[in-house]
Amino acid sequence: MNPAQTTRASKFLSLVLRHQPETAFLTLDSAGWTCVEELLRGCAKARRPITREQLQHIVDTNAKKRFEFSPDGTRIRACQGHSVEIDLAYEPQVPPNVLYHGTATRFLDSIRTQGLLKMQRHHVHLSGETKMTMDVGARHGKPVLLTILATAMHDAGHTFYRSTNGVWLVEQVPVKFIRFPHS
Image 1 (cartoon, rainbow, N blue to C red):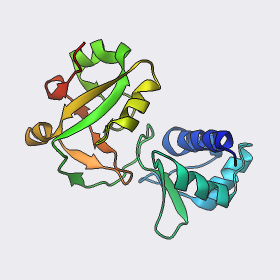
Image 2: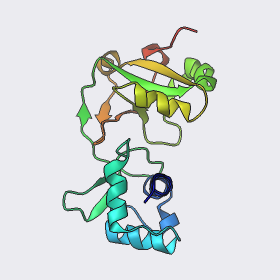
Image 3: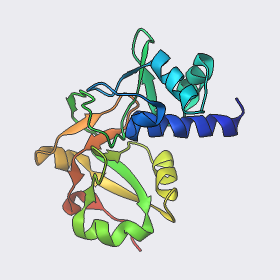
Image 4: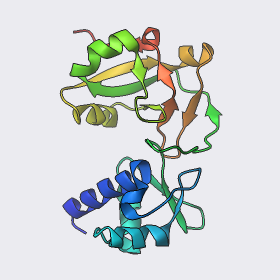
């Protein structure tokens, strides 16, 4: 697979494993898992065929580590970002002092009023590093990096989870725990 093909296949897998499994004629179990062989058959039926080797390549090389195989390699799921009803069964974790959220400047007025909301997803996504977080923000316009006072949020009773790919997940981030860049 060349890089463009890998990106297209990865985006299709994100659609199938996070939002619309029916696109590949699949059903996800309650924790978001599906059988690898069923996924490969479903991709072929959806006219987006990939081989087991190509799937392995996508999982191994995805910069955001969006997908994971079960320990025995027979099942696959997305690590976070679902809009379909699933329970990833992550255990609550104590976050670091600060985390980051990348967004576009056009969303700042809403965030200053409402905080960060999960919208159609299960959680708000936060990161411990800034480079990829800014890249995420750039997908929607001019990027801006928000600093989240994670320890203070945790101390106030907010529950944090950490996905297997290192993304921190919370229900919401109230405005008082967000530090906005100076304009």
